[in-house]
Image 1 (cartoon, rainbow, N blue to C red):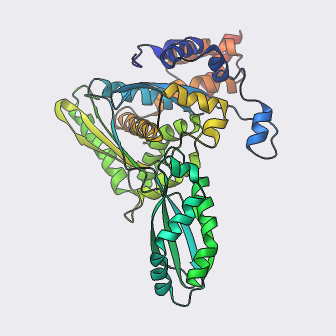
Image 2 (cartoon, rainbow, N blue to C red):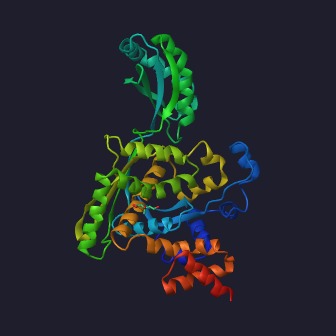
Image 3 (tube, rainbow, N blue to C red):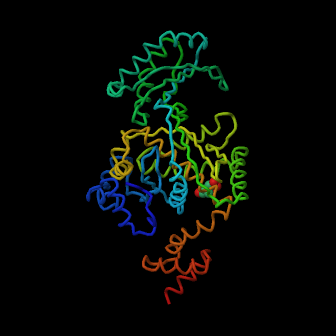
Length: 419
Ligand code: MEV
């Protein structure tokens, strides 16, 4: 089945859900969970975090037109920002006939950091840790036999000396294959269990025992060819490339450029119950790994006025553990995606980030983003202006006819509709 559905955006939410349900074989029960009619209660919320008094609903949409590694996918996106889902779907449409997105995954290795201070001879301590490498890895793996039984667990370590403001400290990096889990709990448990042994062999004092969100051994890459995005207009192609080049050269622009990428990535990360902050921290830290903050995507001109896009970033994403399984709607997110492994999910999410960024640059290089954005924002503004839900469509029509989308215009349309 294809997710290249013409006019999907024109359907009602119920009709769209019916399409997605047919694609992902969702049950009637699943549909009720997605619509928020059942499945996630105050009691569930109370079991997830502290001091619960309610919940904060965020719209859940699906991006269409994505083909990733030869498979069609609907990508669930939880976001409050208008035009993000439409933009990703539009960009993906341009890749559908050129083979879609192709991805690769470096592996599911997370880094745990154990930090040792008050060392008389840091270099000697470093050597001692390497001498005990096998015992250290064994001690880590004793903490998580289940992960080990799936082929995961602590695989290797590296010791660094870091010069801080007061002294030379040791930072041990434990490389843990967390397989289909994001892995924070597994890694942190190993780190904490290791601390007394590390203190014994180094004579120092362990302070931090925590994973690093700079998950550089969990890097995902995606590439795609965007077919003739400007109808052969060479000037616009040139403007697109210059917009990309500015993001590579200028951190002020790169921050916004990468924010555009994360508009897509964070929305899918949230929709699958993964940790948005871990992903954001990892992405931005990776963007500055060569000493200067830069773009996470690259673009080159291809044949027949096409643009070849690539993205590379770490994605510490899980399919098991945490909210991915305990949150009823997040479970639906992965069901819609029909993914079987965290690596597959990571490839899809990286592809979404690339499409999102391409869409932003395409708009910025041509008509700017405000026109499209404001059109999609009219509904929000109409509600803000006090419109009832049955008045919103009328207000949208008036705004599109007049091509005026400012808040004072929206208030004027509401008056017209009211009279
Ligand atoms: C808005 O949320 C995202 C953009 O600013 C990204 C960009 O500038 O590339 C449109």
